[in-house]
Image 1: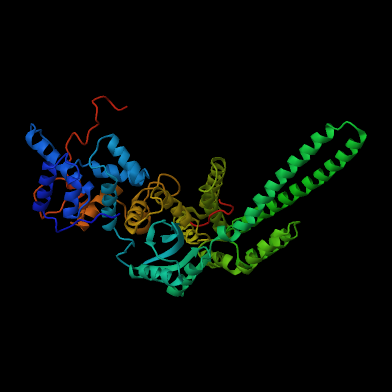
Image 2 (image 1 turned 90 degrees about the vertical axis):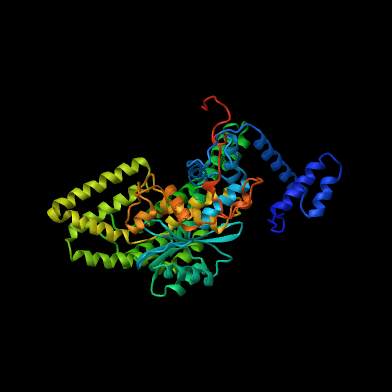
Length: 545
């Protein structure tokens, strides 16, 4: 049941209600009679009575000095717990109650976060025309779609939208709104969502679309895992047949169990060979989808098409009825898969006008190993870092004084080639814990708050370590932390937080001045502990930058 603040109950009316309740305490049926007379709930009447008792107790007790302004650490504290700590609002309320912080109710905290979210936009706005590459996807909260678009290299969330559906019209409006905020898309990488792709083509007709490799090849790599499990099952059956054979006593049993063993051994050999062959071919397929060859030469569309068609033929010849069915959509989508290699082919011709083939190959290999180092285990990471530095040293010996400039140029060019939308899945995984802690009951204001936190927090590891997505997008460094930016933004954007309905009940004189969360008076006893004692892949490597 939703509670509604009734404006017809003036302060004087409420005082009369409290007086009647006070005088009739302990008389059976009187509270119900008063509640019915004023058309209110008995719970509300008891709340008023409790507030009156509290105010009278404070009025006639010894005056204690108290702090009139809120502790400046209270707002950062609840924001850190909610966003950095990913606490649910009930858990956050429990933490505040344990330390006897006020206010600590779930309703107050929920309205407080809604206030912050209302002061934030759902779409980034740029001061001038900005060329970007989109990564877009859909994430669901209790079957309600959330449309997310990020920028490929900075991972900044450009727009996050709680939508009624995920049709082409909704996605088109989504991308049109980004255009109105000075974003110009040169391309987008995504899965094959019908509404998503159709909406993007309708909004950005001249831009290119790149299909996501993870979604394209996922079924094929899942089949490898299935064959691996079958191989282990066959090994277990062979081992069991071996034990059964050794336990046989009579000659008849020996002969019968020997046949079972030979059958299990043959099936095991077939299962292992099937898995080994597919595993080898998929390793070759993954290598064929790298932007460059092992010698550093950027691959061409024709070369990659030839390699993939050969690998598809070899995979199809394996003794597995499922593989031809899985390869059919890959063959039909081959042109979409090869789009990034067309960009790499044009880039190769452009860069050859600036440096020799040998030095270009060395720089490409250096970039390739550096790129793989961010996706590898610690042991492989060290290997790729070592290889990258070796090729950089080799290129420096060839280019001399031009090395620094050309190295930056080649790396920046290669970073613009996007082959996957895996980074948007990373952002989705960042959002998902908040959806889980809210039990799927998400609002646009909460999404705005999550978007602001993600864009202004600094990465703690990886190639973007120490940088916030908004810094990478705009090129401008943030002077303060995201919490200070959020508080500054909300205080400067809105002067009417509308939190009075969730504030603690109190009988106070009417004031026209609204109260913000930071203005709610908190006494020192409310902001201190209650005791004086010390409280102790994916199957495919992501090629997006």
